[in-house]
Amino acid sequence: MTGDDPHGWVRTARDGAVLTVTLDRADQLNAQTPDTWAALAAVGHGLDDGVRVVVVRGEGRSFSAGLDRSLFTPDPATPGGLGELGRLPAAELQERIRRYQAGFRWLRAPGIVSVAAVQGHAIGAGAQLALACDLRVLTEDAALRLPEATLGLVPDLTGTSTLVELVGYSRALELCLTGRAVGAAEAQAIGLANAVVPAAGLDGAVAALVTAITAAPVGASRETAALVRAAVRNDPDTQDAAERAAQARRLAELAELAGRG
Image (cartoon, rainbow, N blue to C red; front, side):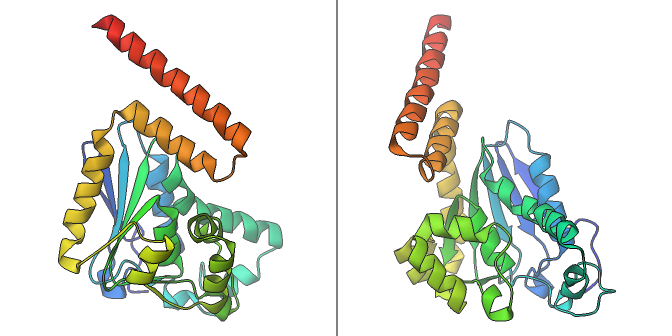
């Protein structure tokens, strides 16, 4: 590592209802450490009700090249290194990983829509961070890759569930087992990318998407996002009931607003 950072090389900026979270370690292609994941989890924990959209991006030419290479060490004296983790008791190790996962899972928290702005490499933990978001805008040079199985590991930062949701079982299995790179064009074709744009157009495309998302009334937007997320796992009867309940809440609120007018 090129010097520890107390904020895990994560910085944030707020513009009204939009929170931008930036991996700020361009000299290391935004390689991640456990401090990065703790910082991301802290951002999620600190969200207030005024945040509607979270944009996740990486500084420099890559979104994130994944786990910091210094952590691929058998040395048990390296905090957060694979050697240290592998020597922990199973329950303690799983609790440690659970805390790491918290840095990713909040990106689909109720009340927000998350957008990953991906350029260059998104490898391993970088790919899983992009997958943790609701939506992804990729530059034409972007490529996502999950090489964990080829390294004797598994994707463990919430990546398997979100990948299956996006591309289906057989495609997800193939991508995870082979660890091959998925370029931007293929990512769009199989549903990993919502849009692919030239590198110079990334900021504009993300801004346009954010504007479109926040144009809808906040209550309707949040209820709709919750319904779509639930539809992935609900059976039809359960989902139909969820739609009825959500619409009842929306109509009651609209009636209340009309009464005030």
